[in-house]
Length: 425
Image (cartoon, rainbow, N blue to C red):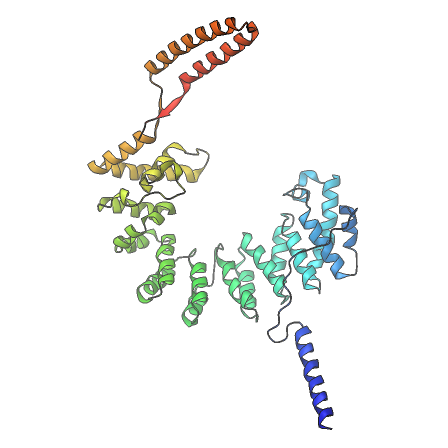
């Protein structure tokens, strides 16, 4: 009897374990992550995979969507261009689009996420597509990860929809969804600042604090600035201090940011490479002030990314590049050139820095070849051609060979007049 009871208990335990392991969403189990793998069927073409979209088998639908996504013929589908309406390519893509669109709402999470991935490529009907995604509350991890990826890559700024999606993600049991939610605010115009600051203050997890700081870093209003600057003074966490220190460069109130950095100039100078690369109005003003206060550009040298200016002052290298590579069609390039010109003028007012800068310019600027060099080179060339002509006669070469050879040498000699050179270091 005892043996029978023991066997029954063992059977029950095994049955419960199997149910727990196979039931979706139970306990700590998660659905399998979609790898978007698919079966390539020999002899099948696009039209065959399009037919597979009509299948009632979810895995066959999934396979077709993955194939069609990976095998799009162009980066920009035809239906994104009204001018292509009525063409065979347009009609074919539109047919697939219309078949895949309702699959976003599939009960099978793999099909749903694959459909979202496929449709994300199109600009066609994009605003409505994004609104539907933000409203879509399928709890599937796969589906929501695809939606978040779309939100991050889109310019949609509907505050209500974005906040609704954020709150939905925060309520999910998935650690991934809870924490990836903070990323949807990064490039948006409006974010729930008070909610994020409250989350920061109540969270004991470092990673969550860092994610929230990253979300706030592109939305530094005066209230966010006060919060971040106070947190910078209070915290002893070096990661947090470092993120805040550079985030304040994005402050909407440039005067407030400038005054704060001016109080921390020694730390600014320790991180001057970051300020030189930052490229906004506040960073330019800080560089100017540091030069006025006696900061030496030679204290920060180029790294491996500046092979042409290896072990040279980073500031001089950046100014030189901006002086000689201005893109006149880019407003950003023109703005940067103007600001670097102002910093160059600051350098020229300091006798020591002026000498360093002009020496740098002389080393890397290109100059026309000296006239005497060209004259002497022409004389050497004529002597070389005369000796070559004698050698050609000696070996009885065809005159055609010599005339072609002579023409190439003359051409190279003429082109030399337009060449430029750099001074030796």
